[in-house]
Image (cartoon, rainbow over all chains, first blue to last red):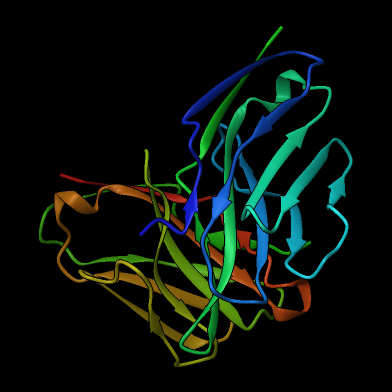
Length: 116
Length: 113
């Protein structure tokens, strides 16, 4: 079963507007972490933002914020004031514990295109 | 800054060949991972290691093995490459001190002909 679901294969947004990328997750753990990564066309994976399951405030990093709704098991990424350089693949990931080890599992990704 | 280095950016191999993908990290991280990335499937975990000489299977270990003889180096081995192993392979490392945030290498695009 999918543990990380990103329902939007592709999104587009006008430059300078805000955009929300959806992510829902499934876990029975009480302690977990949620991550967002950006992958530009060059291929490198860039860490954007992290939210711990016990964090009461939504995480923010510059123009990125994570809309964390624990009861709904959602961790949507909000990018404010989109820039052309934001065009990339975006992956949501969750840290889960299995067999005593922590590992990150990823969603299928959302391709974002920012239009001028 | 953490640096994770993968030995090759592009690799072309023939079916049946034994393939080694090498990964080195320079930040003394305990944890190292190998993922493969395919369109529409995201990143899938192949193997990971939390210590020297230690390895654990991820979600898709079939057809792969790994080696971790030194803390900084984690190798992925395709014993007999097949065309369905054509993919982008990403190595990553992490430490518990940073909530296990992954630091990635630049990836190896492997084509098996």
